[in-house]
Image (cartoon, rainbow, N blue to C red; front, side, top):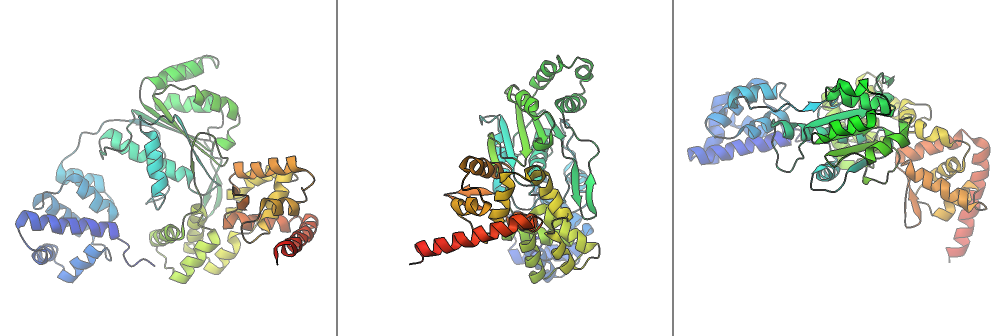
Length: 467
């Protein structure tokens, strides 16, 4: 596991030491000694703070922040970075106490609370999303797509909160877009928690639901009092009066999807729209795959620390591989372990066809496909341990005689983010493949025929290219 769990905090303490050297004309050794004296710790402890290996107590963090303000002339953004990176519980209150309250501009918003205490990974995708949200960028509709549980909503909410802090003046940043209103609507029907799948009570699943959420957030009761025919124009006018960020979460579960998309297309330039969906969209796209191993292991470590459990390197790596780097699966698994389940049992249950993770990530996408060519292609693709050729998948699925159905089925799997195709080959996330194999096992008649076709294709391939 990471030996520097507070590396970002260590960078802030290093900045404090350097600032003291400049302000007091000390050398670095003297600066460390002074910090040790003021905090009543040994020099070696200060060095461990600087290395990010050890977190000071809350009281000591307050002392360090005060020294940064009084003696090193560091600004409030440094104080915020120090305390937030150390997970100090009341950062804003203490920073206001030391540096003085900042005038905060009120931004109309209804953002939900972030589901996690830290945003891990996805830095390139976050930077891309924030770039697309800038007013000088032509993109009006932005989509974030990927399988269920891959972190679409988490990414969008993180970007929205950064925009909110920049807009209000709480944390000014020159390259972060600013808005006068930020509105969040979600058609999400379920949450995946360590205790199972929970139903969401307040989902906005129609265009009228979205209108009501906009009206409440903007404090425009006149919108809800108008007739259904008049509401679209009334909402457009209300949104056009300010720079607005509108988030439409889980587009695929909205009932009147075409009406919603048509409305979003027709919004004024002052409105930026971010859509999350399991289906690949044709807007300015940001596509999420599994977390890379390094970022996945960081998320596992962070969740383990938050839940006060210990996982060794071998266990963390096994957990990453079993979850395939899907964030929701990682959070669920660590939560299960923290609840008292043995890690071996948790890993065994993760990929079960009827398990909570599989149902949350895939059931909504796969259920409508059952009995259709796309479902046969999904099961056939899962049989290949590596990226199969298009011809091999179609042959194994028994669709060689129906190329139109094969084309439509493969396109549908890509639209649902269940597979990606490149240069005539197809690829699945590990968790998707395990689910596809479970679907295969649940259809024994198809499996028997598919495995026979699979073997024949390999034999013919080997005979043709084996030399």
